[in-house]
Image 1 (tube, rainbow, N blue to C red):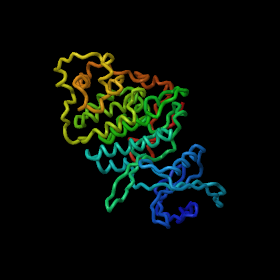
Image 2: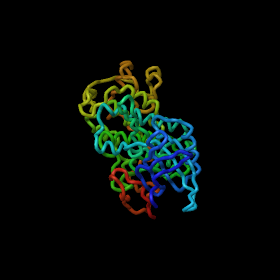
Image 3: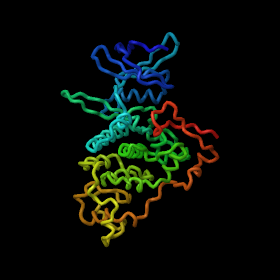
Image 4: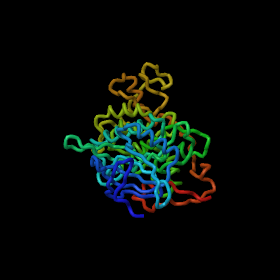
Length: 388
């Protein structure tokens, strides 16, 4: 079917400039509204679920800074096909975060800003009572805002087809394998997981931004899941010798396999605001391998015996937690923070399997490869369907 040259949506006329996307859902066009010359993206699809329609209505009533906004929506009856077509008018973003980092490595001075933008978008979605479930570089778009002749890049989360209300977050494999949280891989269909799955995915994305390689890389879904469940994440992060120490700690907290101890959004925002400079070009001033601290003989109480007044409201149950205000903490807190990690017992993750084939959903299944057709890269294939 030939692409239209003009679309009329709720009495507004749009000139179609180019087709920028196509899939089983329908097509996406870059268009320009005649009345105000605003450039938009128009999604034309042949069906929509009731939950998606409700989500569209929520977006129409709100304006978001770091989520892709929806401007208009209409269901039109098409005479030629005698079917209803769904038309959604959205903000137009020229490139995705993935497209950007392919050509432009993430600069140290930009890292903190990018992180603040994305976490704010996740927070905006969570405030609606929704979890995205598929946070990945391809679903983070860059919106260019012109302000007094200068272009400001605003990072916006898109593709809300996988969103779900918190109270309906039953364990299910939704999302791209590289960014799935361990609890999403479990096979207990009655077990609820929380919106913290988006925090895990965000941590995986940030690792990829710094290294340009997925943390849990693999050629098959089984290889990826095996690494998600069993990879020594802390060791992998610590091997990034050129990454700022505070930032390493933050990545570890986002990638805690136990969702109960995974860092919360507000804590991330507080810590990011404290990190005034993030260096991926220069060696950090902090001794990351803790060789200096190994020589110190510290007589400290176990964490469970530390007086509550020392934590200033921080959660000390998580041994990976790094305090928000290091410079403001007293000496005892600072000493406790830098205890040699080799002397600490790592928290056991949820259901760590010695072999990924022990996971119920992979038992008696063949080792099938992911489908990479029409994929721009090998680092974000879509979910593969496995045959019994």
